Length: 305
Image (cartoon, rainbow, N blue to C red; front, side):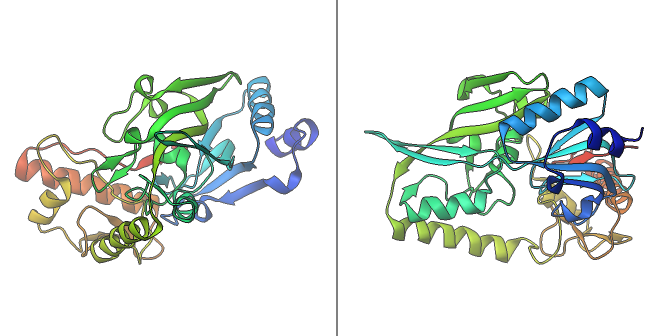
C-alpha cells in the first residue's frame, strides 16, 4: 500500500485536515518548496498523539512545521507526513506583580500581539511584528529590537515523539542566540507561559507602531522571504559585510539579495530552493574571501535531497 492508502485505512483523523501532494510554497513565507507527500493540520494534542503513534507503528518519515516563516523547503519536497501545528490557546492570569499568558504553539505572534494590546498587557511589543507562530519563535529564540523570547518565556510544555508531555522552566530550555533545546532535539512545542506586565493601550500601541514603521522602512516586506537569512557573528553584523562586498541586488534565478536590506534573500518571483541555496553559497564564499569570516544560515532548510 502507498502512504495515502495506509493513512485512509488506519489513521482516524478528519480527512478535511489531510492534504496529499501539497505544494509547500503555500505554507512558507518564502513561497518556495516542492510537494509534501502528506500534510496534516493538527489542532489538538490528542490528534498529535494519534499521528505520532501511527508514524512510529508504520515507520513513516515525520516533519514538523509551524507557520513556515523561517523555512526553506527543498524543490524535491518532503516525503512521509508533515504535521502543521495549529494548537491554539490564550489564557490570561493576572498575578499581583506580573501577568501570566498561556498561549498555544500555533498562535501567531501578530494575533497574540493584538490581543495583548486590547488587554493592555506590555512586554511583547518588540516581538509583535515577527511573522510566524509562538512555537517557532520559541524554537529559534526569535528576537527584535533588543528583546528575545527567552526574556519573556516562563515555561514551555512540549511533547517528545513517543507522546510524552513535559513542562520545563525557562532556565532549562537552553536558550541561546537564535537557538534553544527545541532546535537540537525531537520535541514538539505545545504551549508556553509568558511573563508580562500591565501596561496602557496608548503606550503599547505607540511602541508597536514604531517597530512596524521601522520594519517597513528597513526590511523588504513587499517580497516573499524567510526573514533574516543569516545569523549575526560574534564580532560582526553579517548584513553589513554582505553590503560591503557590494552584493545588494545580486541575484541567481529568482532569488535576490535585497537592495533594501542586505541581510535578506528575497523571492523576486518563481525562485526555486536551488536558486536560494546557490545564492547563499555564493554569499558565504564572498564573505570568507574578503573578510575570512564564516557565516551561518538563520533560516532552516528542510526536505528530501
